Image (cartoon, rainbow, N blue to C red; front, side, top):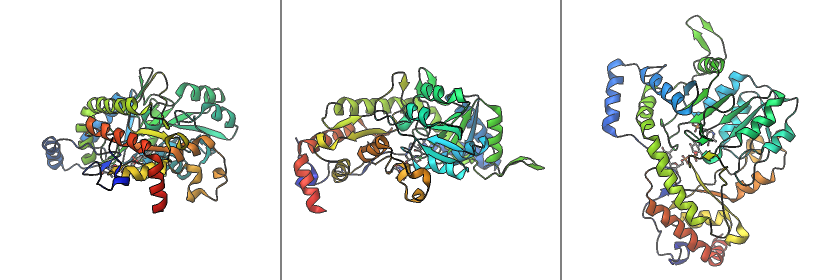
Length: 396
Ligand code: T4K
């Protein structure tokens, strides 16, 4: 077994940095053809031909009647929440990217954090049932890492009280639950098509829904609130997707099945290799869920692994592996919310997950051998954990 670089100093396992994600770019020649079209028409934004074509494809791929493309996932979330005019409390998870919670606050509602399931890291429906009340205007769930959250239980907790459920599905484009595509759950769902996502338009996102009034509202909102040339019906903003972004999307969306297949292969290797390593806990995939494997998480149980998550992060870095602590800190610990009453909560499962989880590299152009390499390194770090820990604490 190779001695980890952090102990031997012989140099990193990987010659170049291996990131947590990498952008999938379409073939240049094909992109060039689409750019020619844009150059011919000189129609570059404001609901152009390529935008409209991509919008229909996104709706089709998500099993929803309508899609509204947006400049990014954050603005899509904001536009959805603002359109639905949620004024009171929005029950949500603290174990997410800042965009989820900021969009609630920016839309004028108040986040109320519920703890997560300790095994799949998504919103715990029992917590939602406990915290739901007369002030609750909505529930916002997140399909963490692309694993579909407990949509049935969330619906059962919210529906009898007439509380709508919406989803931040940033990680879950083309994920499925019991054969049903992500995009058709709750009143609406939101995707991110950021450069790091399995389907990317570089920057981009979408709201998908079966509700025509939501489609209309979001569409107005992302275009300054303009309804037609003579009426402005909402305090809107500019969050449209340009033709250049749509061009990248039109080429990339054709590749999504291949990308999903590759991510599945890599995730299977990780799972097969890491599930028996003492001190490593893998995300529980709920029966019926077909995850996208957008992110590959490992939770480090320090007592059994021999070192904590932050030590593993540093030791991987010295091998040129840039793992990420998604999602640390949990949202109720953000500095920007420290004076807000909604941040004064104890959420032990979310806090444990945020302190213990590391996301490992997984993306389309990563090869199987590299994933095996990452697993070998993790195994050797565990085997040498006591020395690694000593080395790191003497360096501090
Ligand atoms: N809701 C959830 C649950 C989300 O996770 C996100 C975004 C959103 C909402 C909001 O959606 P958007 O508004 O972003 O559409 C990244 C992404 O920027 C962000 O989209 C994503 N979630 C989040 C989980 O990850 P950072 O700050 O970690 O990105 P960064 O720049 O460190 O990039 C990560 C790795 O990706 C790099 O180490 C290398 C690779 N990369 C990055 C860029 C920028 C590339 O290969 N190419 C690139 O151009 O947030």
